[in-house]
Image 1 (tube, one colour):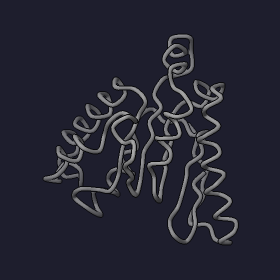
Image 2: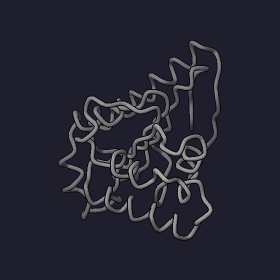
Image 3: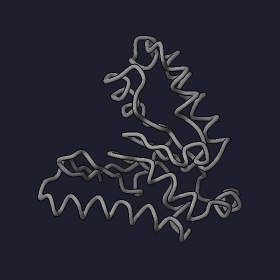
Image 4: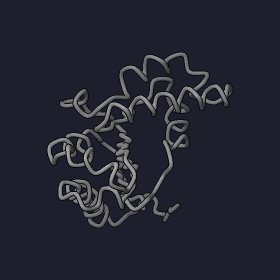
Length: 173
């Protein structure tokens, strides 16, 4: 579910499961600007490394895509895709917060390391749009994930006061 106001403030609920990064979001951003005002953030270095590999693979498979033809893609990837710590004190128009980790005992140790402050820093980097990509079953038990839900509720409250909805839709996989 995507919500927002006439000013473009939006959020995406965490009940959407995505196998990987949403190329549609990235393509839209690169179609607007060759160096988009967009961060891709994760709590984990391994997730960030995977995201960068996925983007490069996508560009090889789609050489005519907006991302592939952008002369600024490599510089953007270096500056705009990283762990939460790099972005403390910075903001972007849009943020894709990639949680990583699937439900199961193998992920529990990594998820336990993520605290409320880390989540808060990640979700408050977004000025207008916040996309949260993750496995709700893996993360829902974590009390600090309430920060994400609270942020989404704040955006929904603003939307309700404005009386307008930019877009809404249900996605699930």
